[in-house]
Image (cartoon, rainbow, N blue to C red):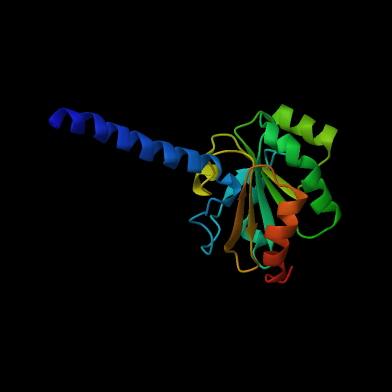
Length: 177
């Protein structure tokens, strides 16, 4: 009897673990809640990507809603979402603050020159410390910051027009944007 129990318990544990893992395969990673939502946006000052002698800060942006987009030239998803960011910038919905994450300045500048620049400003987060403050664990990630300086929404992965319309625009409407 004891031997059967020794074989049954690991089998049950394996089945429970398999169910948990399979369920995880079908979760939408862009729907992972952020602990920042509803809290003041982390303040930062970074070297300007185009002019490292200048600085980019989000402190001056409080008072109107804006997006923070974390990206890098090494990121395939960032290239995938770039056209969507250009479209948002063309529509003048709100300013987009870029954080170029752990990238090479020359590559990032070339990227923006070739693909277009949707950003109102781009800070260079060479060491990744600002991204850590924002809770970023993979690029691209996009945050909506409200006029009051609080994080309203976080999107993980490449931003699509569908996600923009479904997740951002309704929240933006409540921000005076």
